[in-house]
Length: 82
Image (cartoon, rainbow, N blue to C red; front, side, top):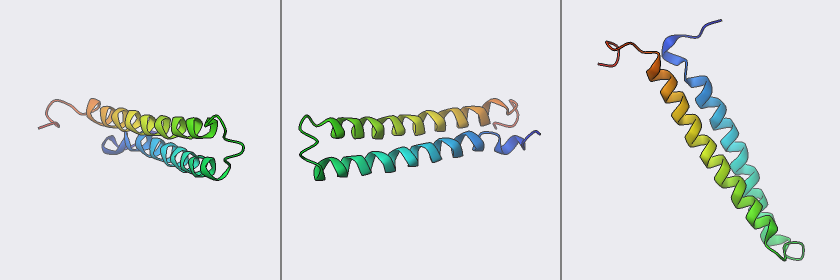
């Protein structure tokens, strides 16, 4: 089943938005937990992991947005870009 040419990149963008939002929620939750669980977090392990998850989800959102926009503009012909 082929999607409409105008909305081909939207599937990629929506998937990466979903993945980034889940990653940000998990990362922020772990970051807040790292302040509460100070006895377990002696080496700042939870803080490092949570910042890594937040950074990775931001990278995935940017990469997904770039790929979605690239997909939308690639399938257009030279006359459609004007």
